[in-house]
Length: 251
Image (cartoon, rainbow, N blue to C red; front, side, top):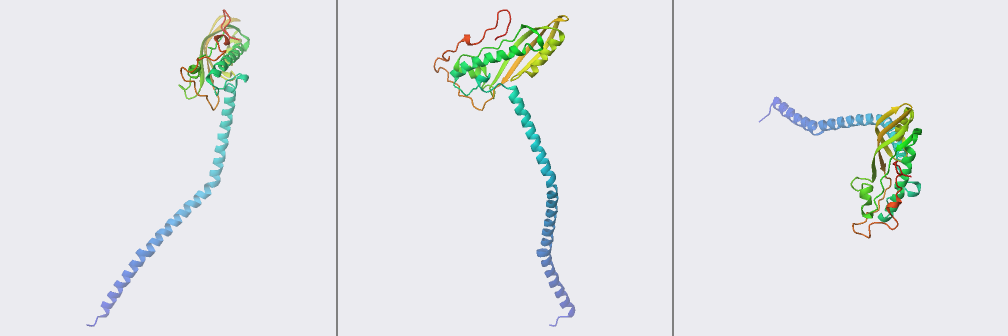
């Protein structure tokens, strides 16, 4: 049977369409899609690369800001916390608890000296000054009872010293209460100021609290309850300076 020309044309067209479809869907379309993806990715990468100088500038600025904040914090820590050894007026908690009871008495006396200097700021006469509590002489309990550790995440002294009474003129009294905000080595809060009397002979009364953050990376483990006698040899209540009769204050 002889096929007509039209039949051969249709057969040829069909085969051509099949070949074209195979080439398009198996090769050209995937290649075009992949080419478009690479082009888009390349453009995005070029945009990100163009941003690099700005990103590096922001990173440098961020580091400078962090370093500046860290510097200010170190300055605050060195000014607002007591020294890390007893001879300089501070405390070191990386000693055994018996030694700590002795060192803490010296530390307490040094704090008392510091508040006695501070309470006279402005040239006032101190009628009733702050009296720092004596340290706990019981070795197993000194960290918990005096330094509030481990009840708090870090050792800290907290003294609610009650009422302070000073005498002077208005400028002296106001300068005195403001001076507590700049007390070295401690955070002191004086509030509730009440002034009585007739100028220039005035009496100022206010409340005072002191907080001491203890520096140091190591804390000697607490002595177990019942270990030894509890109190270090030579440590006694007399180690703490008593307040003078009639007026509170220490050293």
